[in-house]
Image 1 (cartoon, rainbow, N blue to C red):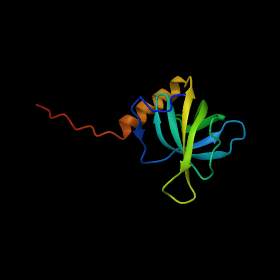
Image 2: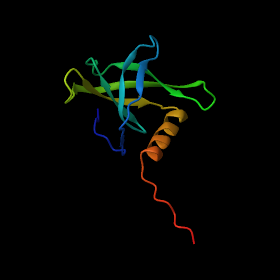
Image 3: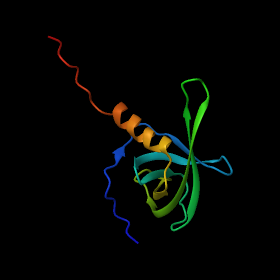
Image 4: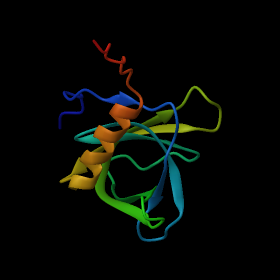
Amino acid sequence: MQTERRIQRHELTSFLTVFNRFTDKPMGSLGALSEGGLVLISPLPLLVEADFQLRIKLPGADGQRQLIDLAARCLWCREDVTPTCYDAGFVLYQPPAQYLTLINDLHHYFSFHPLQASA
């Protein structure tokens, strides 16, 4: 099984909480994401080669939460440089359109956009 990334990922400077979809318990924070996967920063080590049902909760424009549900497999897990934290890499199974929109929104938010000079 290939575990090397081929799609550019975007590091996040702020973290979003990722939940277990079935228990609604927090699993950790989103550390990085790409179109085909994500890195989760967790207080506990996660089982490698196990499938997980994940949920990201986002604030909606109308005050309602937007839920992004993801099916994923943990490919690797190792200790983070921060004591008591672990980094886990996931491959996503058929990420929904809302997840791809989240990537674009975060990329735009964390990118530098110089102002255009007006004539």
